[in-house]
Length: 446
Image 1 (cartoon, one colour):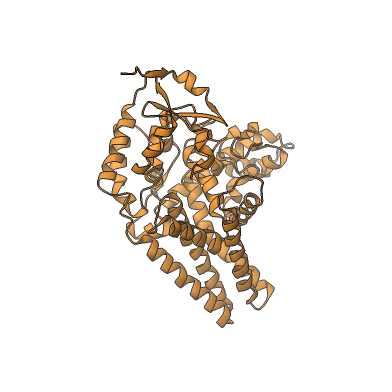
Image 2: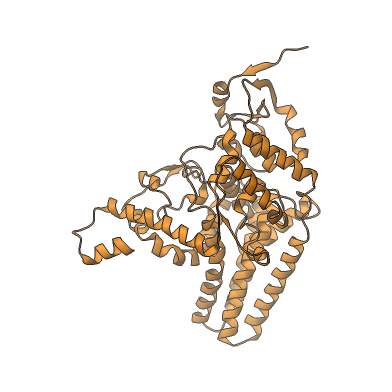
């Protein structure tokens, strides 16, 4: 019998650079340097978590069939002194139990109903714009279009996390159709940023979903001009950023109304960059479909004021979704640095906030009001998240971990309070001109 070889945690940590990526799963060490280049989820998870045990994250993001891919990557080493925390033991037991119950496969008919509703809304929008001359009808169509984009984005999100169709090919079709073609936002861009967000949840320098300098800063840590390891550049906190951040609690909602423009820009920047993009041509074709039908639809409106109203109103409706995503994370705990694999569960509970609502509102939030449940079990179909929520609550209570669930209103209040706190601290840094009563009033009650 061949004696097992061991490697220390310190030695494993040395293998955390591009071209030299090692990870540990259940105490066995794997060399994923080459696999990272072809990994369906991209290389971001490896670049973020290499050098650590990543068992919990592996279980969260992969079905049972993925274990077969590991053996060829085994280095022959085991992790010395490998231990599993009580939290991780309970989490893994829970994941196994959910799998045994078939919850990851019981997807219901959510995708079918969502797509049917999307195409019904699209028909109403096109018919209303083309056939009616009423300004109010056109305004109503714009609002319906915004809701269409919200629901279509949820389908793209679901299909990006797991197969919601009968095959991988149809699943990719659902992604391109619901993302690129209908919303103008590339599924390739979404996967690139979203995978990093899940792995490095609320890391100020690794989670792209918190990196909104110069417009927003959820933490005073951004005032030090942090380097974004996701974008590979410094998030410079200059005088312009100070000015914007100083009033971010006022500008938050107006910016959300036009936030979609930023997503369009980010999509184009990625698709026409030198970065390796999976299915680049397919993604570009899908974007071209959007930028064909949407301008054509707008052109049917009788004049430019109505066209402007239509576009702005449709964007403003989608702000509800952008706001929701911010509520889920902006006011939660943040940290600086890479995520560490062996506290993965704790990082998810620390960096998320749920939105409590009645079950009849699940369609509106796309299941993402159960943000912690989604982060812990990202492959779980949204129709199962309400069912597992009480179990997650009990697990958090058992290990004295935070479980935050607020109403939509209270979540907004908490988020604005977070933004205001950072805003007032940014104002202190600006060393303003001699204070007067107006300045005092803004600083005290702004």
